[in-house]
Image (cartoon, rainbow, N blue to C red):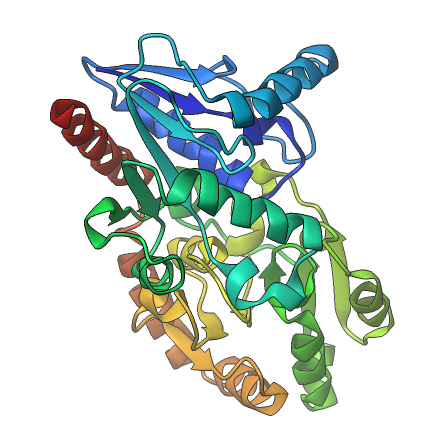
Length: 358
């Protein structure tokens, strides 16, 4: 069986989808066995993930993006592929073989106020051109699957949940504690859906002694409509803005944190929560969308619309070392279900079932 993966998202500046695709392709290569896997365009297996840079030279990147745009309307003819997995950038169906696609979330439908019009139009086109016609759609959580069935009215038998994984570096045991100020950590793009304004409000509502003992560190690129939030971050006491942190440095940043806080308004999965759990860091997160599904009993949950609820949870956890230790142990155990090898093996089973059905 031959499977072709549309790797177009690796060529553009991105965060979550690019990371997912990079690690998923790597795990598929490691577990391919007798099957054949190719990417379109061809990406070297040893390419190190960089969210800011394409793995191809500028000329080849531009040429491929043009071909991908044309294929959106002309359709695909992947050479000899039994299954073609299409991305939300290309948004084109294969003319031969079976077509699959991954649906990461439905925020453009459920929270359109948190997206640019261009992104909303692109996601709707992806749904109309690919998701409603694909032989199989992979969702990254049961929460996203339920949203897809309800909002897009996809046929349940065609929608399959396969959890993404956490990189192996996050599962390494932490070394000895380093010096320096203890900190709470948030990772992710600075954009309205991540709810950082309410996190800042909760942070500043804590008694000042907490801001003397701890820092709040915010890691991640500036996203859509981030200017006002970035200004608030710069002016907030005890907050350190780290900006974009390379993938290789993130596991250490997680492991050294006292608490990981993630008050997002909606997530298709919430990979940073799984990364924090694998790192043994106690988690405070929202009680909405996929986040309770991912963290289970290994997190403190808050109403993300309430800064006081968030402040209370942070204070309670910072004051209770025993509770932090319990959440740390529970998180490490919980994160074991989110391994890339398992994700790849389940993906190969789906591809084989589709190819055999042809």
